[in-house]
Length: 403
Image (cartoon, rainbow, N blue to C red; front, side, top):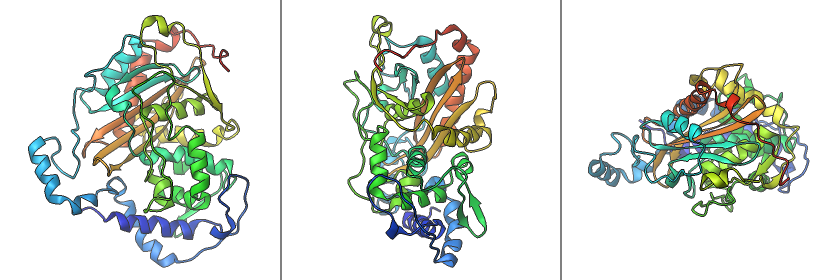
């Protein structure tokens, strides 16, 4: 049985107000440096709500099924796409159908197609040092106006909070009782209450400023005409800032936007326009184009341990940690209530032989879909490339042009 989404919203919001060592009245809405004082209240109610909410992280959005139970069941019987739940997208599909890949790096494409297999989703592989898109599997899905980012929103939220000095990597936030966590563990284990607290500290205006700065809500590419931008809300979602900064409520992003952001984290702060060559000739003549330079180079070392921790011991551990070819990433699992479609996200990058490669996976479907599943797909992309000795064969990209 699913918990009512409103219960979780109230739990997250209440916890953020209790756990966050700050005064909401002391925070302004303009980007800048701020300081605040601790204020704690409503401890008993939050302690009761937290364990119940934590047990159903993956199912937060399914309250929509209660209002539309009969139509959803009827549609499910007609389409036979999902056996259980309110979701209308199939778990499995031919995800390569309709793709154009004349300009692809065929080794990268084969690695991605093989890793995705029968799952219904999209894989984007890009060069973080140039913005060149090496392949897009399931272009119809990747070019849409996006889906809720789920817990992958925690990466830009962490960068925003660090930029505003509302916390640092070692700052511990009380989750419940005597339990406190800092940023590394919160990213690795995708702690919703920690990031709900950061959302309350940042506020809507500041979070929106950084989301746009990092490329959300705008097209990521320079030359993909079919690409549609994701959406950023014009005001705080009804569910509150806690849900916005822990589950991405009110926001939609595309796999391309996620690839652009992950590339900037990987290369030290340069947000490139993504360029997807249409043929082999274009692939050999791409000149990197900088969209903007992000002032996050000093902050990236603060979030990388958590992104590596996700693979080593956290939500993406099914990849299998390899210290010789480390993978940094963030999972995301939730239901996109607009569709409704269950989602599994994984945004990631690796650094091998001075090459930084980005792999983003978005899975759509029903109960079989999750962030850890998406991480497993990405892990297989990296393993397929390593098995082909890809990083040794591929020349290092020099991205000085266009900067």
